Image 1 (cartoon, rainbow, N blue to C red):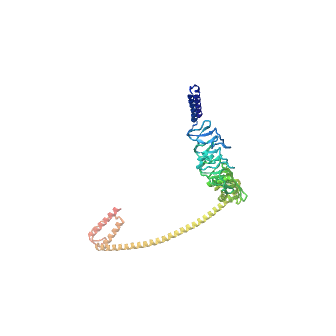
Image 2 (image 1 turned 90 degrees about the vertical axis):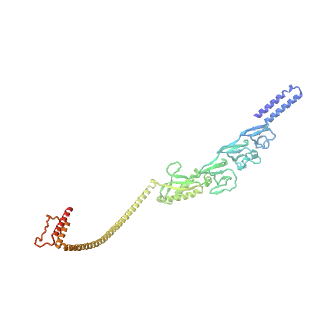
Image 3 (image 1 turned 30 degrees about the vertical axis):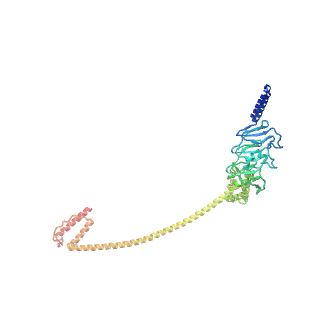
Length: 526
């Protein structure tokens, strides 16, 4: 717009100068005016040829006048043909873009936001090969050259149409006449998942590996890549590369009569003895990260088709296993059935990329299907238990009897031992008493001899009669015998019989004094 205004002003000024020619007096003056008008016009054209591009803009040049036309099928000029030019204008001033000859359209810098990816479609370039939908991917270090429209259309030999190469977050100066950019969300592989790629582009080297009925290929080839992507962001063309998220978490499928979300109906089996009964089952399984591509190749994802296949395998295995056992044995051998079923289910599902980690059996049968059988078994078990209880009681009684006999024998042995001990004690006591009696007799003998000797000595001094009297008085005093009335002893030369007394009057007085003293001590004691 500014260019047109500048040229217009120059033209107006030039015509204004030329309009003064009739009024000029001389030819030299007229020549000077013409020259000035020409200079103003040329200067306005030169100034008008400058185009300015801001720092956040891209200049797209369109050539309106020229001698060469674009080749058939081309829309971007690379050799100065008329039409949109491959060369773009960087920020700053650009001369010689003559008004009317060139039109400069300004476009903003292309910005790819975080967590998004830019999908590219080229409006011009070489035609894609037959049966090829997306142009071959450029190497990461060649993306800058790819975005150079001149290089893309010449030496780069870029292809027209959707590009496999994408733009990651950032700012780009792109010729929007050639490239159309569409921004989409980045592919994010969440935790506990892997991203499996089904590529619609790439080489066909026939390096695929057969796993069962499916084939997997290396990265960069057409088909399902055998190596999945771990959790993280993937900057891929979401149309060229179909990404399937496969969960690696441990999952549980329940087969029960409870009508709950996420649960399958219970499994009904028939035993070899003709009983038909339901079995509650819980299957635990998960997908190993490395087996994600195999799951995608077999089922498309880890959803309904996988569960449908798992259900078919589980029901078939349980029904087949039940056909070979009796109903009662099936109830009794739950752990054996769990292990056998897990091995069979795991073997079949492993080939499809699914790892079965556990098979658990809950309730087996119910009152309606196995009630009579279980009651009979219960009664039989009760009878067996009662018999065992009776046997235990009988065994306990026998043990009690043996214990009583043992206790009695022990008691008798105890009594016998006690009697033997008592005999020994009696013998020891007898010996002790004999020894004591002998000692006492010896003591008495010694005392008697001592008393006899004392008596003899006393009798020699006071006479035998007085000595005997003293002994009598001693016995009376020791025995506490009260003698009343007291007898006064008087000196007399003869007894009541007329016999003369032995000893003197002092002896008689002494005897009386001793007798009186012994009587006083006896009274104090009493």
